[in-house]
Length: 251
Image (spheres, rainbow, N blue to C red):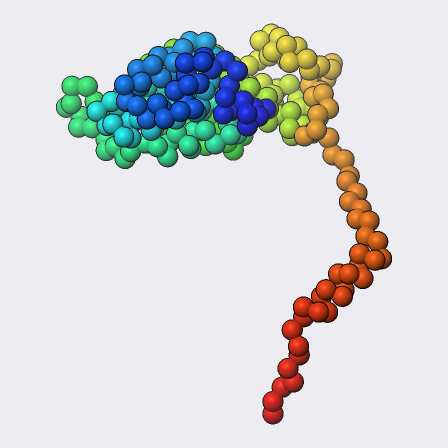
């Protein structure tokens, strides 16, 4: 899983972006185009830099005239696949309230219409309801999001599957291949190839074995405190000296 240091400063972040994000220049509106170009690099390369994307949203807050709805939607799509981390909620917290645009507007803002769908997808991932996520994602309701945005996000579905894989690794030592397929939206040869790529094994009964890891191994832990008698005496003495006197009740 992503460490805090990698989240704050991904190894793929270019030096120029590091300078912008780490200094006061992150609030300079003239740098917004550089950060937006970096976002589209993330879209094309399967890289991810939440802190740089948050800097874009903060610049939009300070400078509403810079607002670009397509950029915001792409930021939310990238944050969607960071579950179970709270990146999506961090991004949403920086969005201003935007009412739904009039139906007769030439170029309406797509964000108010898509934000509820993105939020619903995020909630399903956070709740590990993966079959429901794929059902919603494949539905006609989300066709606009798929055709106009996620299709451009290289590796989006693979990143969602990695969210499911992280959850399975943390909760299972073995799982039926059919059930796993519903989590990954894969079946048949595609599922077998994916499982093999993960280094997991499937037996003749169709049960997939998950290698041991710190999250799926139940181990009892014995906590033993070693307190010496002199230490205990000091504690009792200190308690006796600091305790309040008992005042007798007055009849």
